Structures are given as structure tokens and as C-alpha cells.
Length: 109
Image (cartoon, rainbow, N blue to C red):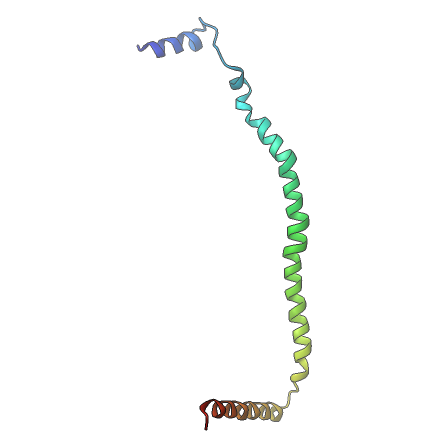
């Protein structure tokens, strides 16, 4: 048996020697206190800021802004939708004439 194993057996299994544990090990490396200090203080403040400012004003504002933009655009474009085929045909013919005029002007003819 190696001396390390014999010493460990004497300390922990047979309880012949009182175990020596540093205070830091008894306090679990102070991990729990560190996590509590981080989550309870700055972590909670960061989560509240993220929820109140970033989400409520930034993300929700962007989503609501896109919704308002689409609604207003649809309201303004509603006037173009007459339901008459002759109006649509006239619009297409006018657009074709404008495109032809633009191509001719660019060609220099």
C-alpha cells in the first residue's frame, strides 16, 4: 500500500488522525456567497434594465413601429385599389409608356 493511501485510510476510514480541512474548503470555496452577491445585486439590476428598457422600449418599440408602418401604408394604398379592370389596364399602359420613354432617353435616340 502506498503511503498516500495509507495516510488517507488512517485519517478518513479509521479516524485515527483528525482531518485537517482549511477554512476555505469548509466554506465551499465561497462559491455560494459569490453567486448570491452577483445574482442578488448587479445581476438583478441588469435583468431589470434589460426587461424595462431594452425589451419594453427597444424591441417592443421596433415591432410596434413596423406594425404602424404597415397599417399606414395599407391605408394609403387602399385608394389605389378601385376594383375596375379598366383602371388597372390604363395604369399598366401608362407605366409601359413611361418605361419606353425612359429607355429611349437613355439610348440617346
